[in-house]
Amino acid sequence: MSGVLILEDGTCFPGKVFGYRGNSQGEVVFNTGMVGYQEVITDPSYAGQIVVMTYPLIGNYGVNKGDNEAIKPHVRGFIVRENCSYHNNWQAEDSFENFLAAHSIVGLEGVDTRALTRHLRSRGTMRGIITTSAGLNKQDFSSNGENLVEKVTTKEIRHLPGTGPKLVVMDFGIKESIIKSLISKEFDIYLVPAWTGAKEILGFKPQGVFLSNGPGDPKDVPKSIVTIKELIGKIPVCGICLGHQLIALALGADTYKLKFGHRGVNHPVKDLLTNRVYITSQNHGYAIKEESLPQDVYVTHRNLNDHTIEGIRHKYLPVSSVQYHPEAAPGPEDSAYLFNHFYDLLVG
Image (cartoon, rainbow, N blue to C red; front, top):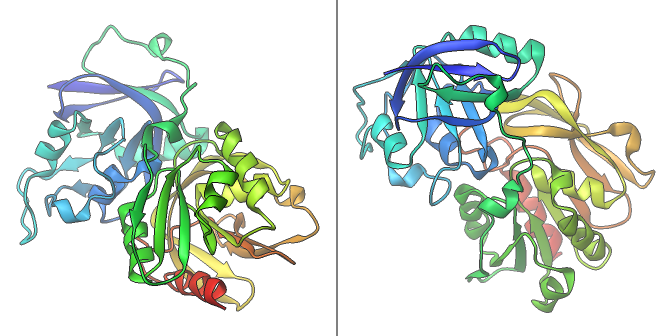
């Protein structure tokens, strides 16, 4: 079935619909990873987005339940150059196309993804519609206006027992691999919804609070920013990805939207404290304004591609964060040591 991606600037990219047959719209972004398409699809941080994969062949190793990063995917659509119709991997339980169809995700193949990626890089990410109807146009776009965190956060408190420090994890769209990383360190985890207040969090008598990754603009969750403000100074706080941006806002800094974001598994980040460079996995569209940082907060990590802030730390309080995903699923495991550092902070 023929289909087309219509961007909000009127540009069209034709292709062939696969997976779920229908129409879908969302913010169109690109990911530069060569592997990990299943983790990308199931990462809650992609909620509300149509993802373009720059690697040309997708689906060749199928899908399996063990690689899911959430109970269900939240992407609105998936665009590839070529969908591999025959998968070959000993772990595969189903085909990539069947997976998309089962979760009502519209796929579009046969697209010139190189041209599309260059367009998004030069014009910036924008909303788009994947459609099989020739009658749709850019006037049919709905406004953004979505609280994406509400769609992906846990709806109830989950206790994941461990023998280590008691840790409250604020879930803004946490990936399963991050939970697994924390469990591997034997944290005694209480996973709470994003809207949980400071009083309730402190009522658990935790030794630390962890702020997870998640989708969208950090300014769309103002209640969580207030909660983090109330926690800082009372308990150690660590954040990653969206949690990193929320810590910055709670400390009085500002954030802004990047032109086309960082999405992939090969982003070089320099640790300014050790001068070591790590290859990191990233998925975000916002960054911290460096000139807005208060005097008692300093930069610990920097992106070597565009020099944006990748990590901050408070000079006097036990508060720190990084922009990337330390557990790196998919991606390199260069930064997994950060979970050890946080553990040592809580027990030391």
